[in-house]
Length: 248
Image 1 (cartoon, rainbow, N blue to C red):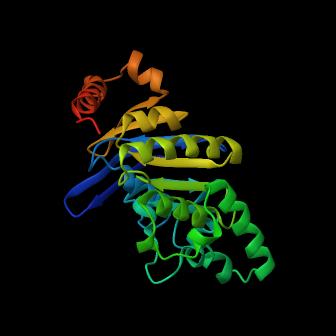
Image 2 (image 1 turned 60 degrees about the vertical axis):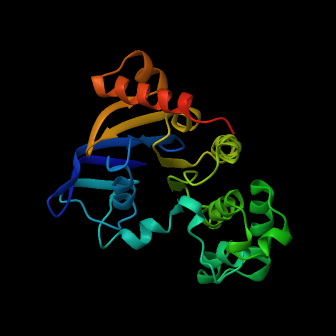
């Protein structure tokens, strides 16, 4: 479904990606894991065609992502960013229905799809009638997910979707996302710096640092068969940070 082949991307003198290759099979959940500046979000931008590789290729369904194919391919992808990325002047439901309105969907079809997604996201009509500033962080994230799923795209890209949430809400949404991914069987690429989130949600995990892939595999592979000293260092640092966090 999604394939990167020897992809390099520079922003000025900074190498954001250094000969990165990865495959995301149809219906799987692939987590890009790493600290800030590791290149995770750049991978999503290249898949979306928001940036072009300096070397190598990015392909979706066998079609190389470029200026000619981007619009057609992006229509097959839902994109979720941290805190939902909602338009503040629109109500939650108007944010959700933007793409369907642009596609010329009928009122009846839109209403049916919103009702279906609201049930999945556990949001009622009153909540969907509010503006983003009137919603909690968890509610904004659910609305952002509804918007990404409105057109029922086969591919879902999520960039640190739960990063701004408190630990309790984050854990709750992690569980809901895991159930949702399993039920919808979509191709998912999720960016996170949280090893626990990666372990909960990812069938395959790609650990990155400084624009390079350090290891790809299951969470058990990273724990039991680290391919590089950095893998153990990263896992240990995350575990120590979690144990040192103050109780809430």
